[in-house]
Length: 465
Ligand SMILES: Cc1cc2nc3c(=O)[nH]c(=O)nc-3n(C[C@H](O)[C@H](O)[C@H](O)COP(=O)(O)OP(=O)(O)OC[C@H]3O[C@@H](n4cnc5c(N)ncnc54)[C@H](O)[C@@H]3O)c2cc1C
Ligand SMILES: NC(=O)c1ccc[n+]([C@@H]2O[C@H](COP(=O)([O-])OP(=O)(O)OC[C@H]3O[C@@H](n4cnc5c(N)ncnc54)[C@H](O)[C@@H]3O)[C@@H](O)[C@H]2O)c1
Image (cartoon, rainbow, N blue to C red; front, top):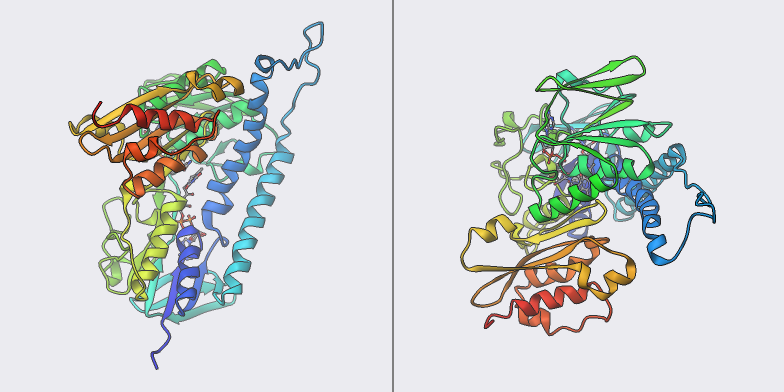
């Protein structure tokens, strides 16, 4: 009889826990070693908490179109009938409660399928032996297969050391007892942009320090332009082409000094200047695992590292810092290691979403790559002409589709709209399954619906046109 494989997973975030579920299903003996809590940063401090906070901000944002829809929130004298007040302590309690519940659900699931979870910090002693430091002491666990999925942590600058009170990383904001009066957000990547708009929506006065010409430099530039415009119209101050040199505490507030000498004063500063992989001190180089200059673990499309039997998944690999990608890498690793059917990771089919209002959802080829390729055709349609958008009071947003000129194969798309994260799925299905624009266009959409514009965009890309 074949011996049961032993799998040890370092890190219990989406990369680790999804892998554990697959490995258990495939009959392995599985141990997950996790330092900070099952669910990882994704569930406890990053993805889940930020999206829960944004849900409250979105709810308040919905009130902004009330008058357009015939609902007056003012009395005859023009005074507000009721002033909605975001109570941060209550919001944070909900955020942290939901994160803890999600973590507990994942723990229950892991236990149900027989995965052993060890609370502690792990490192590799050899390719087939992991040492875990727990409260009770040290434990050595032998493994046929090791998966490293230790994630990433906020990048901290010596000139802006977080104190957890006024100078904050995104992982420290949920302990704030009150809404920051004047919040400075440094960094206009996805983290900075999402949280800047969330606090703006909750009632903070927000200044965004953005190092580039436009916020969200990694996103579709038409989409980023819409978001920057919305930010400004709603009262956010955006300092473009501005880099923070330092952030310091001054009395009851903070001062952010920019590289050109300007100073910005605020009550709090949120530093969102990227993340660094948690790969130091794991014994990786010592056992021969190749790391990139940035400290990420080098992996192939089935999550193999340079050492046989050691796999890696998630933010520690730097492939694409998304919970969904981490989970897929973890599942793929276990399928490969344990002899199940494997589909190598296909980055050209990954969908992602920026949870601003409106949201930006993207899948497949980027606009920049499409522009450089003469064989790719693009169409962009504003949502303002869509009947459902009019009914819902949606003024900004658009749909973009990319397809091969000759065959009409759908290569990607961008949706800028409320709940774009839900609307991108039909485009993701088309990209994943290499559907043609004609197949998308001939699929019934509901009338009236925002997806009607997706079908219309596909019709515009009919190859013979
Ligand atoms: C503010 C923010 C919002 C985000 N929102 C989204 C979103 O909406 N959608 C999305 O798809 N992605 C989002 N992301 C990205 C997503 O959170 C990450 O891609 C995801 O967390 C990666 O999962 P992971 O398993 O690699 O690592 P993590 O979730 O970071 O988990 C790693 C785990 O490993 C543990 N660990 C580390 N070292 C050790 C060790 N030596 N021994 C034992 N355990 C260890 C850690 O304690 C942690 O529990 C967001 C990121 C941020 C910063
Ligand atoms: N909705 C989501 O899925 C979601 C949300 C948040 C993060 N993420 C993931 O995390 C990844 C990282 O995003 P992020 O925003 O944390 O980091 P990032 O590296 O994408 O953005 C950080 C930004 O800070 C800027 N910056 C650096 N130093 C600066 C300084 N001194 N002053 C001013 N600006 C400075 C950089 O130029 C950059 O634009 C994303 O690419 C995404 O994959 C996903």
